[in-house]
Image (cartoon, rainbow, N blue to C red; front, side, top):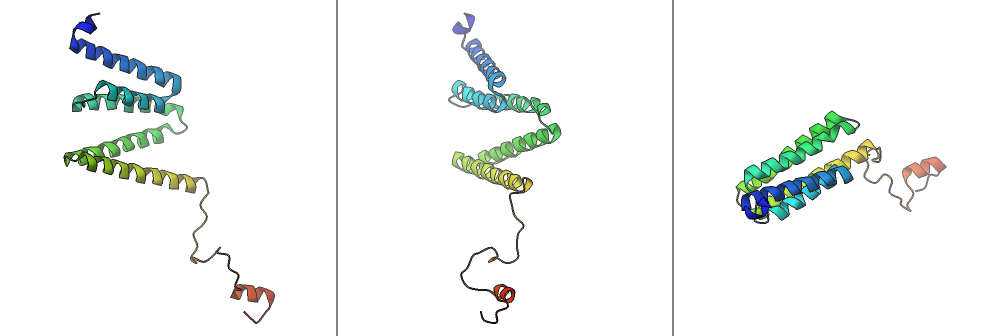
Length: 161
């Protein structure tokens, strides 16, 4: 009841409610959904923007939530290293781009970094799963043509091409 009368306590209560909602989603659905729900809650709580200290505090909580799930993976140290490196990379890109003062540049830079990172992970998975064949020196190898080649002539014993 006091929270309804005091704007400061009211906002703290809303942030607390957002934290409880995020924790519930984390328990019920898992870490990725909780982080997504937490960011949606942050957007709803701070539609006009958020100051840097509150943003750092909220994102630290999300990174901590991500790192707490590391022991449940098959390689927890690798998971934690990738999570921290990814967080620092995206945060650093956003910070550098926002220092220019252009929101469009910051958005474009983040999309470019995330796109390149996604493509890199995709290529890594292809190689790791053995879905990429060995590269060849001849760009025409594997191309089906109707014309006989020297190898075809040698195999059949024919002298004509």
